[in-house]
Length: 562
Image 1 (spheres, rainbow, N blue to C red):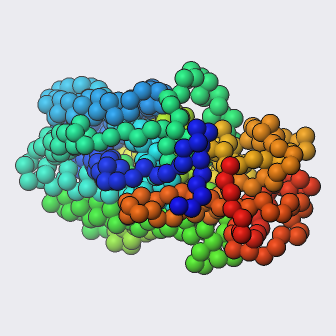
Image 2 (cartoon, rainbow, N blue to C red):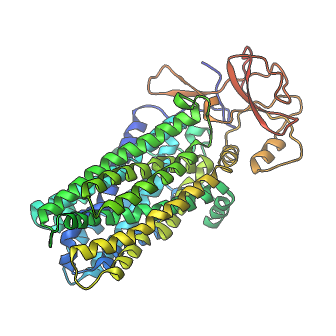
Image 3 (cartoon, rainbow, N blue to C red):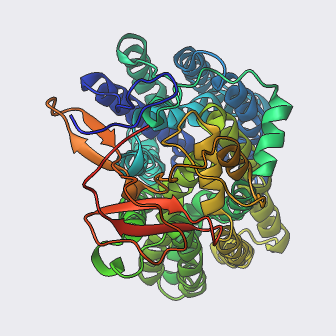
C-alpha cells in the first residue's frame, strides 16, 4: 500500500466507498431535480393561474417573491441546524412540509389568492431545508475532481428541473384543463422520493473525505457568521452570486411570458391561443434543459481542465480557474441576453436562439460557484455558509427582481392591455437585470485576489495536517500561517500539498474505493527555490528565504508521511 495521508488520530484518510455513497448521491440528485421542477411548475400554469385569481403582473411577480422570502428566512436556520444535528432528519422534515404545502395550494379558491401565496411561501420552507444541506452531504462523500463532477451533476437540476417544470406544468394543465393538477404532479413524485430517503439514504461524517472527520459545530450562529465574514473570497463571491441571481431570477420568471408576447407581436395576434401558449412553454422548457446541461457541463469541465493544466490549458494552469469561469459566464451572457431582448420584436425564433446561448452562459457557474464555497470554508460550517449565501442571494437577488420587473412593466403599460403594450413594457423592464450581470462579473474578478489564500486557510483549520513544518519569518498573513509557525520544527523540511494536483488518487483493490495519497521526501533541504534536483514527483514546500510557496520537481527515492 502506498504511503497515506493520516489525520491526527493516526487513521489513514480514505474516501468513503461502496455502493451506499452512490445510492445517497443518486437520491439527492433526484430530489434536487424535483425541487426545481416544483419551483417552476407555477410558471408553466401561469396562463391559467392569472385569470383564475384575476391578478396583474405585479401580483404575479409577488408569488415568486413570497416564495423566496420564506426560503431565505429559513435557509440560515436549516444551515445552522445542518452543521450541528442529523442532516437526514432535517431534510425529511423539510420535504414533508413542502409536499403538504403544495397539495394545500392546489385547493385554494379564486377568492383566496392570499392563501395561495401563503402556501407558496411555506413551500419555500421545505425547499430551504434541502437546498442548504444536500450539497454539504455530497461534499462529505467526495473530494477533489470527483466532488466537482458530482456537484456539476447535482446542479444540472437547476436548468433541467426548471425546464421539466415548465413543460410538465403546462402540459398537464392543458390535458386536464386544470392548473391544479399541473401543480399536484410534483408532490406525488415527492412522496416516492421521501420513501427513498427514509430507507436508503445514509449521512456521512462531516469532513470525512478530507480527513477532518469533524463533529457538528458547537459555536453559536453569530460566531459562524463572524468566521464567514473573515473569509474574503466567500464574501465577494456572495455579492457576485447575488447579482447573478437578480438577473437569472428575473429572466427565468418573465422570459416565458416575454416570448409569448413576442410571438403575438411578430404574428400580429390580438390574443394568443392556449395551444400556442402551451407550445411556447414546451419550447422554452426544452431550451432551458438543453442550455442548462450544456452550460453546467462546460463550466465544470473547463474549470477542472484549467486548474489541472490539461488540454488547451497545459501552459496556463491556475487555482483561480473557478472564479475566472464564473466571471466569464456573466460577461459572455450579457451580450446574448441584450440581443435576445432587443430582437424579440422582430423575430421570435432569433430571440429563442439568443436566449439559448444566454442561458448556457449563465449556467457555466452554477456548480463551480458552490465548489468555491466548499473549499474556502471549513467542513463543519459549510451548511451555514451555503445558507447565508442563499439568504443574501435571494434577499437582494431573485426575491426582489421578479416583483421589481413586474412593477416596472405594469407602470409602463398603457390602458389598452394589448399584447403589443405588454410586450414593449416588459421588454423595457428586462433591460435592468441584463446590465446587473456586469456587477456580478466584476465581483468574481475581485475574488481572484483572495481565493487561494482562503482555500489554504480552510485546509489548515480543519483536522488535515500533512507533515512537519519549518519555521517561517515572523510575518503572518493568515491563521493558516500562524498554525504552521506554531507547529514548525527547525530541523525538518516543510513538505505539504497545496492543491489537488499534488494529491494523487490511487485505486485500491476495491474498484469502488480510491485511496487518497501524497508522496514526498526530505532528502535535501531546500531554500530559495533554485537547486531542486530533477525527479518525478511534484512537491510543495515553504521557502525559508522568500516567504513563498514553491512547487518544484524533486527526487522521490525517499518517501515519508508524518
